Image (cartoon, rainbow, N blue to C red; front, side):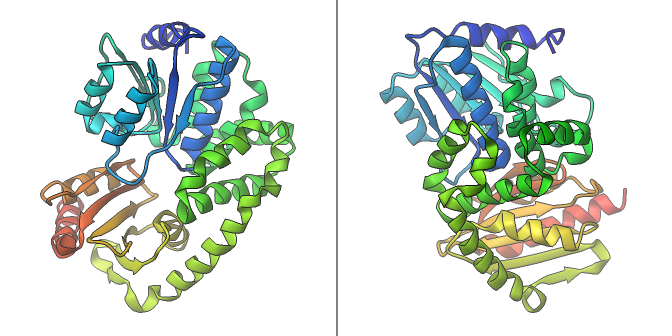
Length: 361
């Protein structure tokens, strides 16, 4: 990694952090984002002798630095901002606002929308360091590799494994996962349970994600995390999933000619990722699009296609771009977004048109 032309800028950013500086880490709330945050915070603490001053995740919304986040960062007098597993380059204007008061480090593995490198921002994406698809180089493992060049993180390899399992990257990183899970005393089943734990807290009560982060951060033995009090959230999520999946056969729309499935459902919890995970296992060779009604005038959207035949990030970008207040993006095999309820028909038409066009090529 040290031989990569992007590495010196990364190293310079980290080494510029002094004990009197105020560091903030903003991470995505899924398994990959949370574990990337834990690894990054540990590395910074070991390098400068002090934990970052502010560590948090944002609420639902575009993958950008939200206005309330910018306000909080200013209030806390943050001098160094690190964003993890967030495609903030989709909305570069928000990074420019952050640059007005802080240095910025962006570490991510989503599609590159715009290289935001500047005198104030270090912009690092997985595709700058690896030749394979960036969706298979999760931010957790990417952070582990980057920071391991600066400080010993061998005791945190299990954390990178949780992120790899959470982002379905075990085929790419099988030997690493098997070796380091065994070293930590965790089984593959244990890793799945911890991924499920993070997903459950994210879905049932996102406000508790930072507390769960603290449990991961303080865990001297990862096995103890299997006794987390937040496992009660998994029971709630599993009951909700059973209810939602029970309506799939009657309420889903299938377009066999396009290998496409739409499924819309209502829930008071943010369980769309868990729902589409279940459906992906059942239909690995189909394009699956779920629309989750949270009870407001919006539908949260997720799309999956694990065989890489069609690009889910491009599909959602194309389908949501013409829609007011709509947005979408992510990886080739998995993407997400938001639309207004009134635009559901147009959104579906856009998805179908995209797939028909790509099917002819």
